[in-house]
Each structure stands twice: as C-alpha cells, then as structure tokens.
Image 1 (cartoon, rainbow, N blue to C red):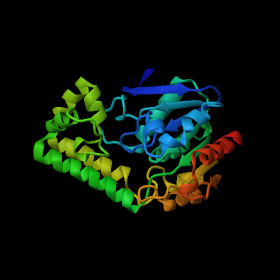
Image 2 (image 1 turned 180 degrees about the vertical axis):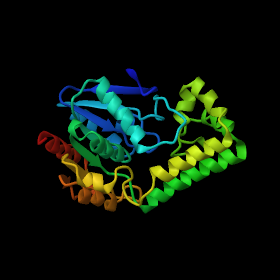
Image 3 (image 1 turned 60 degrees about the vertical axis):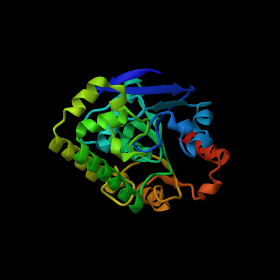
Length: 282
C-alpha cells in the first residue's frame, strides 16, 4: 500500500474503486487502522467498502499512531487528526471529498468539515462514539496507562508494546503510541528517553482535552451549528455509541438527516442502501 509523509508523520493509505472520492475515517478508537472497515466489529459484516467502491473511490487510511502509520510524541488532539486528513486530501489533489466516519471517526470527519467546509461535499456519521460512559472509559484508560508508567518507567512501555500485538483499547498499559513504537525504531528510542514529568504532562493533556464532554468529542457545537455541509447521522446503540450522541449531532447540524432505525435493523443491505442514497443526492 502507498505511504506518504504528512506533517512529518508516515501515513499508510489505500484507494479502492473509481468515482467521486470518499475519505473514510476508520472506526476502532485508538486502533483506527484502514483494515477496520473490513475486519472490526460490526463493520466487517456491513460491507461499506465493497458496496461504495462500485461507484466511488474509497480512500481509507491508518490514522496517525494506528496500523502502519507513524506517530509523534506530543499532546494528541482532534485538530492533529484533521491535519493528517487535510494533508492526505492535498496529496491526492482532490478539490473536495465526501467523508464517512465510523465510531470515533465521526469526530474527525465532523471537525474536518468545520475546518475545511468548502472541501467537504457531504459526510456520513455512522454510529458516532460518545456519551458519559464513553468519556469515563477513555479517562480510565489513560489513567491505567499512567499508573503503569509511574510504576515501571517510560521505557517499560516500549518493551511491553513490542512484546504484544494488543493496542491501547484492549491493553491500556501500552499507551496510545503502541503501533508507532512497534514500527519505528527511531521513534521508540526517542520515546524511551523521554523525561517522566514531560511524558505525564503529554498523556494527561491528551486525555483531558480529547475527551472533555459527555457527548461526541471534537468539534464545538457552535461551529457545527454554522455548517452548511449535508450530513447523514446513523445512531449506535450501546454505552460507547449512544443514541444521545447521534441525536446531539442531529441537533447541532443544520443539514442533518437522521436515520431513525434501531441497530438491529441496520443490516448490511439496509445500511449500504441508505448511505448510497444519501451520497447520490450530494
């Protein structure tokens, strides 16, 4: 698969199909690799890539610090994820794109529309992550990682990450930079040499500012209210993908269409049909 340097960070991506481009923000939390569209949770059965690539160019990519993309030891933020997305759009020389986010990818997709509204034709926000339980779980995950670091040191994170294939979501001890630690020796060496207080500040700041609300994190509601970008919002139905999070996006986005069906009725046939109908209108 092709790799491009964006803002000094290696980004792996793939283009599937032909037609108008859809930039697809992967589900999977801190393990948001491009493969998740076909291997992760319910997405492996929904078949979005197979269906959409018949008429569109699906641009899938490993979010920074995920899959085979690189990373940087700095405070993580939604705006930095958007920087990667904009860099990929620029690299591919697209004037504008449709976007689709799954799970946590909805936050980045929505914030891209806020940052670059003229370059987003429409956005599909499928099962957006958010809710009070989701926020609490993310903070707990960062706290468990810091507990491991304070007890064992920053260098121990490198050793642990390289001894397992688990990511931050399944094993908080390995931290949000686990994938980059496995794939980049230079990054791993610099990471291990980081002074403890500095590392604690980076991690604490990432946790507090990434997950600062009890609904969909990322874009501010006032910015969403000013968007003229058409959006299809599809609700999830569990404690990490609450219906309240999807309703929040519907409330904030002036041109939102809300697909009001329970998850059990979001079958592969029904879901791909609804998404394709929405994209065809825009």
